[in-house]
Length: 480
Image (cartoon, rainbow, N blue to C red; front, side, top):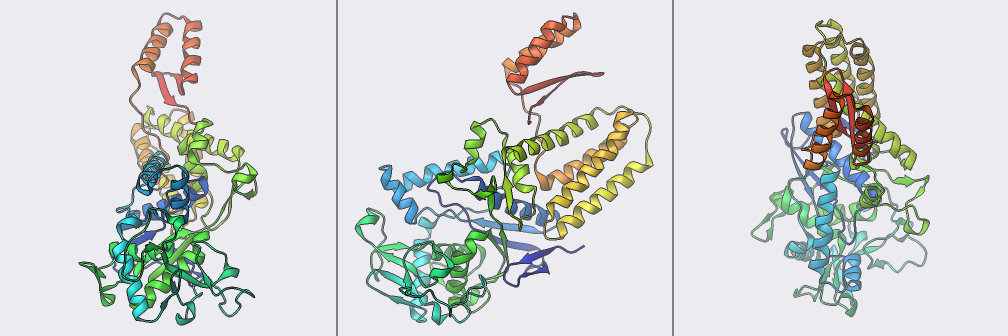
């Protein structure tokens, strides 16, 4: 079955067919590294991880580029507050971002270009926009003229004829709302608020606007347009898919389209995909309302990152997802259930092969693939996994499942997990934990049940559960 995705540009589901049959070139808007990424950010990054994993499952080679915005209004403002250089400040939060990515089991993109390392490419593109009279110079910067780009607003469905009454006609801020649609800044001339953050160019000392950064980095890393610092518009190749949160749609993605297509006179991206907002307790997440959480905030409260991954993945990406601590506990229970199921399969010792097992697996795989081919319908894919678990558990309960059949089921679960990324690996135990487990086993052998129970409780406090099975003592990490 072919993969169908919802294209924001056309507002309909389309059969996915990359420009090159084998390689998918994917650009994803990454973090602005001025603070720890919050769980709303990670909802988008996990949707993109799901897309990436599914494309690979379908047999495509994927080249994903995710930018790091390390110069903008917020990075400059907050680095100055902390009395640090821009580089020192943003390097700290860049590293924190990668630590969080790994904790959530998000696959690494092929490239993570930094905005500050692509200033020359941005300047080159700005000069081309000036030459084509799509941009103009003012006393405080260089701006893109949206009236000169006839299809401005098409991606975001913005009506440029209905400008807000009294609007100045130009906007210098990096982020703004649809009712403030106006000419946007490409290059901001330096002022005292920028401190030591500036680059010299013949048109004026300053720094880039946010939107030109992604146009430059996507062209540099996903096309052949930049060669030896020269931009060749005819060598630009339409990228396959551009993703981000719905909050990036306007102005950021719309402005990227205007800049890039204004220079190359061809389509910037064939497909656009956007994830919806994350709500917390039914409300928009905000520090002022006390419902703002980073991954680290939740980890400090004792929540497992894999449970957070499951929750943020569990609703379709184009639906708003309401985060609650009750739903997070339910996610942890679901992850624990799936991992426990695989552990039980590994211990199967039945001596009877069941023909039904192959039928159950084939049906689950078919439903799993059908769901994800339908615009990444993850909830239906998860339902297929749980339906399989319910059916196989009947064979586990009467201990009739053979090792041969169990291996087939494990193979399916691992295949599904190549997309879901929620099976935990049995980690090496610390010497302290191993000593306690060995002591408990000795206590069981001499039937010192009270000591065995004491050690079980002590291990539980350290995040390790031990279970007594017909095959001996078994341990696992506690996820819920």
